[in-house]
Image (cartoon, rainbow, N blue to C red; front, side, top):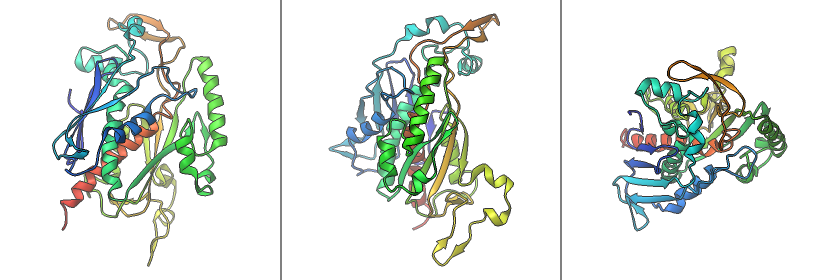
Length: 358
């Protein structure tokens, strides 16, 4: 299987399946001398774990990370960093009735067509469980970009059509703390309560919900990104679209610019810099030094406890209801995954920029 490695100079290869013995990542290209320990990575993994909220699965993985190589006496050595997270609470028997059919909305059919074989235990490599390795690697990347003064925070923008009030970001100086202490990583407590109510109703119905996550990047210097194929916006979009549930990415004003005039979209400048930020902090694929703002739109989780029509590899029709332990919505657990992928892109481009000019 190709396509498991991400990045140019800061390169990450992830491996593992949902119900295999373990998952992990190998990071190559991390500079020597970076302070790093397992607690740095564990904090990020703990944010990805299921909460006590109504949206989350009951699968109780502890996600304890082990650093196997590349760190000595609390500092990176410049050699590959190998990270391991063992699976301890997989229940493959829950999928016995599904191993010979294709689950609608999942990768069962496409994996079978591509490889002629598939791991039916929880979706194998196509499971959202694989994002454990992304978050672990992203925690290392975050250490690298924080040293350069860059901050990345993501938060829930909407679930099931319930949107946050934009004023929760502009009129509350403590909105970041609210995000970190919210079960849904939502900066708007009123919207969060409505989201939880809707999630509870949908769970009882046996259905699932989608939603949107917004990502804010602050402190990124101007000049990161390449001008043609490796544009900053192209790499960020590819990173976020590689997350299984994501169906669309917006940067800055996003789709709204398609119905606006150039005079509305252009960001004027004065002696102090840009006077607005429709571009979302990126022009011609290169960062402007402004805040970068991105949004990802996620489909509902396809594992639903309602009857669905499907077929087996011989084309025979079946009606299935998916049981087992599943999230009702990828939010909030996808929030730290989005942060991780953005951190990986920024770490890579920060190192690439050091090779461009003295």
